[in-house]
Every structure is written in C-alpha cells, then in structure tokens.
Amino acid sequence: MLKDLISLVVAPIFVGIVSKLFSSWLDKKDKDDN
Image 1 (cartoon, one colour):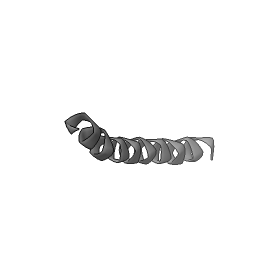
Image 2 (cartoon, helix red, strand yellow):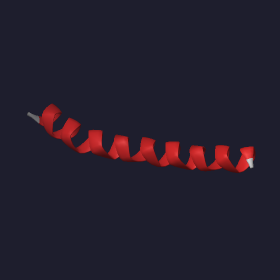
Image 3 (cartoon, one colour):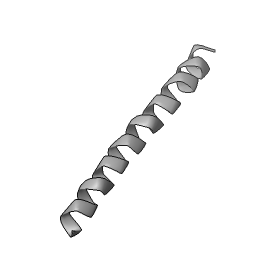
C-alpha cells in the first residue's frame, strides 16, 4: 500500500525532473551547434 503510494507520487516527479534536465541539455546542445 505505502509502496504503491510512494511510486505513484515519486514516478511523475522523477519523470518531470528528467524531462527538464533533458530539455535543458538539448537547448545547450543546439546552442553549441550554432
């Protein structure tokens, strides 16, 4: 029960952090290319 609740809360937060880092990394990569 508690494990399910934690995964429900942690998973979206983790995905959000990863996507933020990935998008900022892509922006840096684009700037370097130009």
